[in-house]
Image (cartoon, rainbow, N blue to C red; front, side, top):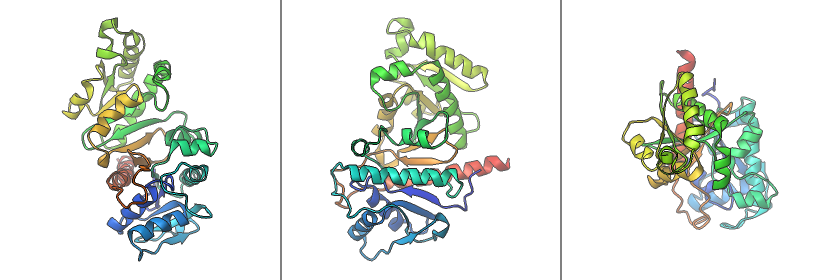
Length: 333
């Protein structure tokens, strides 16, 4: 069980992007949030603070236990000679972003923080730093001690879990096998339950147009997806499908389903992002700790201008608190 008395760890994201600005704005908007600390480069966070409120004083800490309520606590996980240039891909920025994530995972696995909220990172910067990860989810899977993880994207209207994540579409088709279907369905059920839905209604999208149209447009629905749905039902889950990918999210939005299992990245993310980035949240399922993030990128085009909108970052923080609360309620039932 997650201890809500522990602080949340918030990573700064890529220091050349909007991450530090989002962190500072979140504090300025609501300084009385539950105790938390940001992990990253102090100089990059100070630069964002000067941009937004020169009077703001950051509170450096050496341990999570030193974090104080009402302060913008900073645990330095990298020390850059100077902040990287805004809007530019660099190995220096990629390494600093990774170091913050790795440190947060270590703290979460040791039970010293109650969860992790991550600001956006840049995949090219990670690559420039020699880090062969296509995104946060893969770092978390590698360092987080989980056999399988999945992305759950949520907003005020729909929830979706992905069978495959960051790979080409041709590779996604190869990876969407029976074990991957079962893992995604199980994690979708667990994720919805973690958000307080006791018996979630899970809808599984087809891979092909019209969910294969009875085998006319591909047989993955017949040979892989339907057997997985049947197996999940046998385990007691409320699962239906495969449903055509072009209508399943409309039905979920209308309240017919609690969570949609999508087969590949864009099938699941386009509907969520179309409804607005300001409330979209990414939750990593399958980890032994809570992790959420905003559902957008580093926005290099506006980094350093003060225009970044912290709504999605705040929604990610609030979802982490909600997951804490639901875990606590389940533990006491």
